[in-house]
Every structure is written in structure tokens, then in C-alpha cells.
Image (cartoon, rainbow, N blue to C red):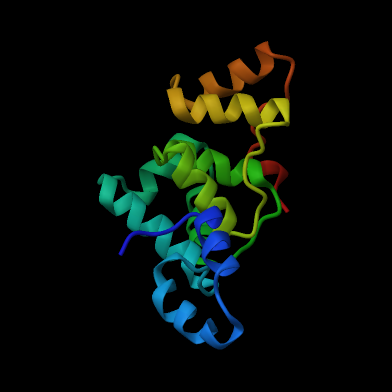
Length: 153
């Protein structure tokens, strides 16, 4: 069974009677938000599927390895979306994978009406180079570069 989008689930819910809620949960299990472990499992599975090690991701993202492992395991939590974006970019996540990972982390997804987010969406689609290249593009467009882990919460 393939995972449904939020819009698809909303349409199904629009046709679902209260008495069918348990059936909805069973049938849509693969598409529903999971527990706190979901983020960690999702990211680790994506990286494994791409043949990318966490260590190489942290190196490319310019994130201290120990901190990165703690973030991905759920041992530490950040309120800095830029830290996660660095990890997802370095992990070669697609825009769709990035949006899903952000949601699983309880972070707002990139929003096309915000200029910086719109540019980041294009960057995730086109993959112009390293994190340094990403920050140069942001700077060139008078936008804040992706913050480093030195500014973490």
C-alpha cells in the first residue's frame, strides 16, 4: 500500500463516518503520523537506501558528528530548522523527503510563500553543490545562510 498525501487523507476523511474510524486507522496505517521514533527510523532508512553513512552526512553538513548522532537518535532535540536542513541536504534528500522529515520532527515544512523557503525548495530540487554553495546562493539573494550547529538550541 502506498503512502497517501494529507490531501488524499482529508478527502477520505470527508467520506468517513464516525463509526468507520477504526477501519480508517487500519486501512491508512502506512500514511498516518507515527510515534517519536518515526523521525529517527525514517531518516536512517532513507540514508541506508541511498547508501550514505551518517558520518559522511555530518561531515558534509558541517555538523559535529556526536551532536548529529544525538539529533538523529532523538537523544537531543533542536529548534533550529536550519540544522535539520543541512543534514537533509547533505543526505541527498529530495524536497519531498525533506518536507516529510521536517513534519516527522514536528518542524514546519518549507513554505513556498516565504522567499527564503522558496529558494531552499528550488535548491533541494536542483542540488547546486555543497552546503557552502547553498549558503552562497542564499547570501547572493540577501537571505540568511543556513545556520551552523554553533547556534543550536
